[in-house]
Image (cartoon, rainbow, N blue to C red; front, side):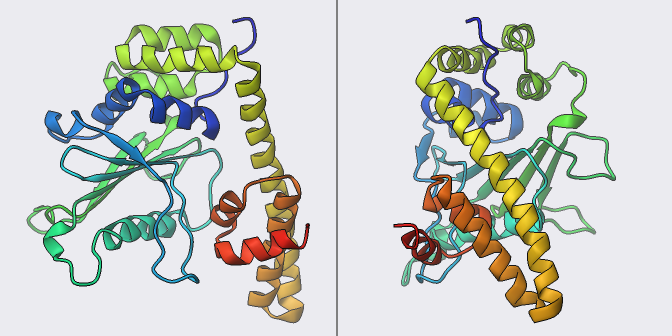
Length: 287
């Protein structure tokens, strides 16, 4: 492999690594979570779309949606840049994953724990130097955890500057890697990381896979540029025409530009927060 390895932070590469290689997925989850070993015996990666009860409900698309052996639900996401209202979005996705487990007439016993792993390639919690945090519901006085509820784990790649000798630290070195030698060093520390590195080597040597990864990265960067520009323009419009209307017009313009770059409607809906039906209507203007 002569070309520079593809980055595991690219969403196309990330999904390939962890949706098609159970050894890599199992090793990563075991490094992050504190679930019993039997939970990892049967992992199932499923459709990442969150269900909507009504057509106008906000669409949610996760990077990876996984069921464990006892049907606990794990959402794994990776983000390059800081996103507005990220904490509220994480709460929304977690709550949605809880609610979609129970249909009308079903029993509450069917609800299983929802676990989120959010990997950020930016500083998320400025008041802490730790790269790993686990948030759960608990009683502040007795420190007793609320049983089988929402759990949110955050990993901040920029804070993991040096290996710390832990399996999770090894994975953070893997996500930070950019050169072949860095990937190889991380792979030597852990068999599961070696599996993930094997996927990257195959993808990096496949011209079609490399083109897809690079196109996805270009689309992401173009989207962010369009979003930032249109959002600022929308804020300016908002001062003159009403803040809410101006921002909505700015986001709609972002969606239109993203669709012109052939970004899938589902992805546009996810990134803008617009209902899928509205994005499809915007897409119809291009036909």
